[in-house]
Length: 317
Image 1 (cartoon, rainbow, N blue to C red):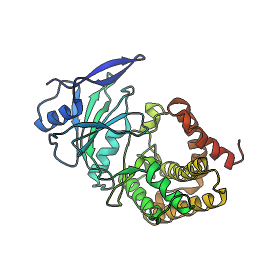
Image 2: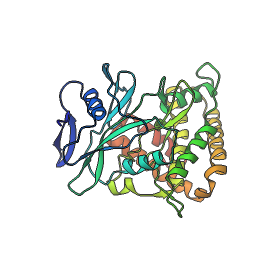
Image 3: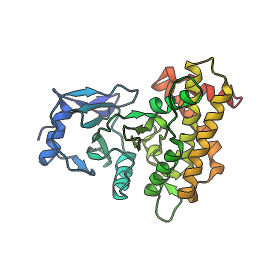
């Protein structure tokens, strides 16, 4: 079997690159056929049978460190574009979530995994349901904040309590037995949460924080690690609102931030509060602000104003 990709050198590391026309559609067909893969490759499990999909490919036009395409308006195929270095957090996380029947993510079709020279399996390409009408949190949550402070018209659609419930369910599925450590999402913010036409929230992207080493991304942490990331991202939504609408006073933005953060925690606590040591949250938030700065420096310079605003709010800039 010939895969529609090749392994190439990327600054001394191995990376994958698509080859030929419509590589995502061709991979979908190969997965559906079920033929044996070349040595060193395997299919990771999904929650639905693999099927071939007709129709064109179109790129997903959002800021991300990987490359995603939609095929036939049915499935999103994500290609890892960075170095293929193990261990990788996604295989373990997705297997646990599938085993726990965690329903708050797009249904996984399959992952194509490659075994590194060190013996680690890393995802190269993944496929999952296209969520109809989906937008990520940097779109829908930003709109909710703008409505709340009077920048956008429309009625607010409550989301924070549901986000807390989804996060708790995710952590319960990812908790180590007999421990309070969690195989955390690792890069948990509103941008990793889709909201579709059905109003449901779905978590995506279990690849971990791209600014960390492979060993750091695969590590298990207290639940506060993810919770802090989400709390900071809700604050960051407010910073984005004020950046684009500077006439809006800070007070209503802060009030909105504190309200949704409180609703998020209030919904999380009764479900997974035994996993959450809230005394860890301030330190993890500070750590995440520094990572936001590193991410902006490496991948998204125009984002730098957001962590800088978080530092100013804390009197550190």
